[in-house]
Length: 78
Figure (cartoon, rainbow, N blue to C red):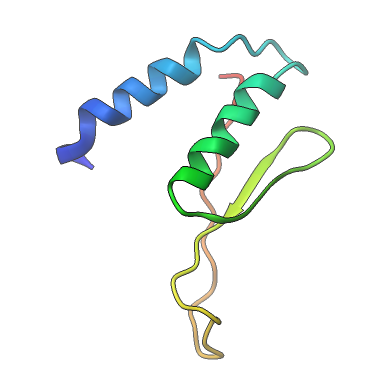
């Protein structure tokens, strides 16, 4: 993460500059969905209230003994 800090900061600035007042985060959510797809995440979708969800495939198909999934979560409007 440290090695890629400049790109991470640039992406954060880009996302912050997309207007996203409460309950109007569609444009920012669309860009996040694009970034998820570009990063190779699978099953990128947006639900009816605007949550952007994606899956990271660590093994395909998942092994029966695979560890429990983890969640990364953030707010688009903050």
